[in-house]
Length: 145
Ligand SMILES: C[S@@+](CC[C@H](N)C(=O)[O-])C[C@H]1O[C@@H](n2cnc3c(N)ncnc32)[C@H](O)[C@@H]1O
View: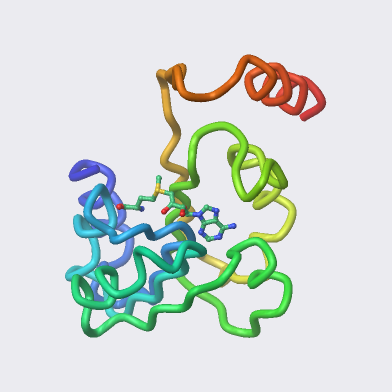
């Protein structure tokens, strides 16, 4: 992440970028690495249990409790730096899969020279609490994509 941020900063100063984090949680895993470097930060998170902590972690950010994929379809603002750190596998009651659905909508929120960062899981892990049917559905969705 540091190398990536350095690279971006050499192309355009991070301090000049309006940033959007589309899957924020409380921002403690990755978002915090760039949050204080960008000009402005907006955070979108679906799950209410993370919102208070997210606001506390980034008091200067605009925080919205929204479904990011739906929000993109009705949002009128655009950003210079978009960070996409979605959950592994299927999420939102299996409505979405990995980065796939967001790809069709991201053009609505980016400026002409936006940096779009996909945080991809190189080693997806098997969660023993999830039934085998979940994995079968996930693989099926991947194959369709
Ligand atoms: C991998 S975590 C994000 C970690 C975060 N970027 C960080 O640095 O701490 C993914 C988050 O996406 C949220 N999420 C899942 N579906 C969503 C949706 N449709 N819209 C917005 N957030 C969603 C989950 O609740 C979860 O908190």
